[in-house]
Length: 138
Image (cartoon, rainbow, N blue to C red; front, top):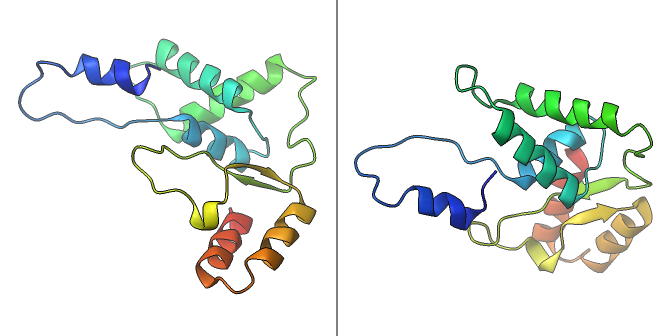
C-alpha cells in the first residue's frame, strides 16, 4: 500500500465527495493477533502491500481479505514462530491520528512478566490499568 504521503498525493486535484477506507499496519497486526500470530512490522507492511497489489475492486478489502493474506503468508513461512513467547501484543498506532498510549506505554510484544511489571508500576493510575486490561482482552 502506499505511504500516507503517497496516498495524499493521489488525492491532489480530487474534488467533490469521495469515500474509502484506510487500512494500515495496525490492522494487519491486530487481525494477525486474532488469528493467533504476532506479525513483525515489516511482515505486516509486506502483507498490506500484497493486499493492495492483488486486491479485487469487485470484492473489496475486508477482514476476510486480511485473514486470507495472513494465512497465505504463514503457509509460505512454516519456520515462523507465532508469538515467539509474547503474551500480549500492543499494536502500533498512527502518531498523526492517535494520541500515544497512556503513561507512554509503547507498542510491541510483552511477556506476562513485563505486563505484571507494568501493572505494578502503574497500580495507582486507573487510566493506564484500564488500558492494560483492555489489551489483555484483545
